[in-house]
Length: 285
Length: 307
Image 1: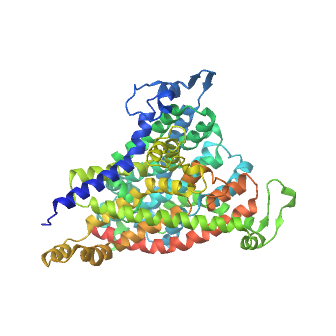
Image 2: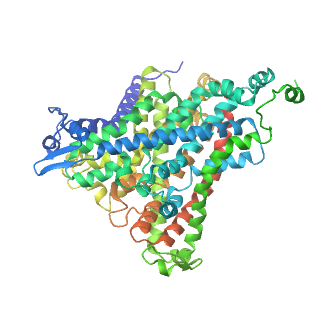
């Protein structure tokens, strides 16, 4: 076995502690800020001990912000709902379109299949604005500007390649012989797909769906360019919120906490599949 | 069992010929994407036009003028320089940090696994929101980081609002978000390496630096290349962090390609210049992604082989 000296273990411990502090501190700090009033936030030096308040969250959830100057409306819950709706629907559409295509690419090497698969993959790497800027002009002509349908369509740019490439890998892992055996027993290709391929690739499909959800949720630029206030998800909404509410830092922090919690929770839940998903199936975790 | 006998036993009724089936299955996904390909070609056309949204009547083909004018345009060279600088610095630092952290966490233990999962949290935070978090922390009035900076003697450290430190600040946010990406890929790579060479080296009493440079690094190279190219492709297109943090400012300190194209389109409504910028960025990413895909395929085959 490898021998490590005491000094080395201490150095490793210090290094790891610094790493954990650097990467965890911002999340912990914003979380703490979200339970503070503006007065405690503005105090210098920053307070580590304070009386926690839920006022920021209630203001966000009720949508009413009471200040000395009067009551302000906050549309943040609307943004949160938009995020949920856009991400869920986009992933559902992407699964519906992507899973059969992934199956076709995995099982049938047809003419041009690799070219098509790589074209789809290349969408993942093309600059988003290259497509988005002309698309704004088209969407205005087509009446798709600032509609959920238009946004969900564009969100396929993130969701489809991801699902296609991850799920394809899972289908390829299923031995083709199992499917042949089932076919020989007299079942149609569709029954084979539904009863054999889909259940066996099930965990992979679920993981791809979760990842696609996270990426859709975290997307910023699509909605920034294509949606106005009432259709914007949290990523864009929170930015607008900062300028509109000016100095309500507690509420901004609470809004950030509410916006990042879903993806963090899902990531922890799906962490086993993250490595594979992030590398588009190239590295197994 | 031959294919012929399988064909014979296929049940009658609803059936799609074997040749057509894959096209039927992949067609819907393709149709959706074709809608997205059209704007790409539109961009190419726009980039050869004099086209301002504010002067639609003056729209005409000027062929290469948008591109030619870049040569003498200091704003373009600034964009190119800052984009390459940003991508270069972030990827290099993230690679070094990510590799270091991955090696610290290499040994499988409950604590190490727990830490590696915790470190994924910044990566799962939306980059735009991460920028907002750092904006709150670097606020000159109450930001905790501004306070900490003043403790170590940086009384008036302006973070993203000063031209001299704006790049540093956005790079810091990028490192916070994306180092875990490289870390998690390299950690998976490190843990999948065969153990025999390391055991042999330990038996022979080979120095650790030698093991690192002659065994670990070469065996890890495909993982490092894939992670690096992946990050380079994303980083040269960075928009979310920079836009959410400074909107390309102060001045034009941080007008990287996508931010500059966005501002050109929506503020100066210069569609032609904006499209030409995006085409140049696309050419860069196309070149990088071709190298990437080759590496990525090799790794993918290896991963499938191990499955």
